[in-house]
Image 1 (cartoon, helix red, strand yellow):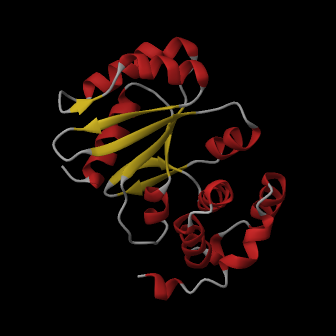
Image 2 (cartoon, one colour; image 1 turned 120 degrees about the horizontal axis):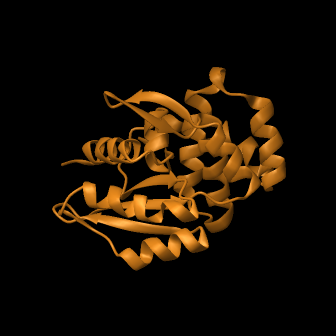
Length: 191
């Protein structure tokens, strides 16, 4: 099972258990136009305190080929952090980020988009929020791939983006200084 099939499986299982989610990270960048490899799959999941058992049941539904720790799920739900699941046959890692009560996280989760991705309806981060989150990650670690990912989405989706929304949140998040760089990156050279 490849990463696309894993994405689809996780999406189906989360929907079956009525857990709200969205795809983020590299796979949202891939969806919006940058063909690249990814080391993991990132999902933001809303798990309220009374839904931890539901989340665990969803993980069990995925099958015996998936490895995860129950106490990691409990801790992530309590701390609003993350836990991961490993697909044993390939070693692919699925990161589940528990939705935080922070203003930007709540806003981007509310703005998630239901799309047909890889022949299946799924929820994914909006293009604007994908750019903003990539800029946040770049600000934190100065890892160039995050800036390049943001530039790909910025340039490929240019005519569809809500520029006012991006500028407003870039300022609030302290990443507006990177917006000018997004047009300067030659995405054609990055392939």
